[in-house]
Length: 184
Image (cartoon, rainbow, N blue to C red; front, top):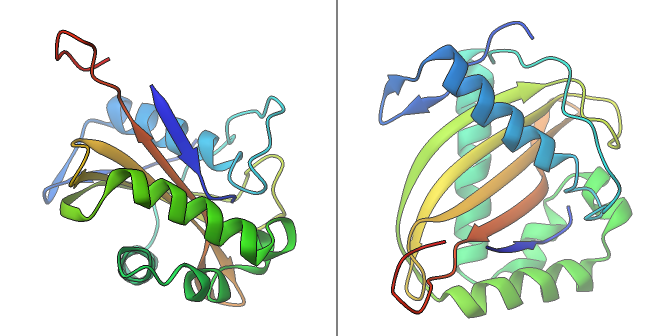
């Protein structure tokens, strides 16, 4: 498995193609997504606990988060890595220098190639992201097919800063193909 990062309960809801997944499956995916978000702020390597509480976001918050993720996708897809950092949360900017973010995201995207298609897999919210500044966080999981890799998992972590959702972390995970062609 290859991973990359660019530094960075009550109820939960994960949507998949307009439907709602089972609560247990959604909780598992949301915990995994938001736990990895704990590593987004500075790509910390220390052990970090999973968030204590996942909550369903309001329709307004979900729409705002998806809009911001689409904007971040557009900037990264267009090679506008510096602008993506400029528009990111202060939490990300405080722990990740602009040039490090640019170098990290560019190197990840260079290997993967251009985007061929995306499918939103889910969204989750938490107020408790250990190792990160206090506040409201959202995690969005996207399945992406790139020119050089298919079924890649992109994770976008957003932080609500002064009423606006801003990028706080970006992760990419792809599986390597074995010599037999099977995905690991």
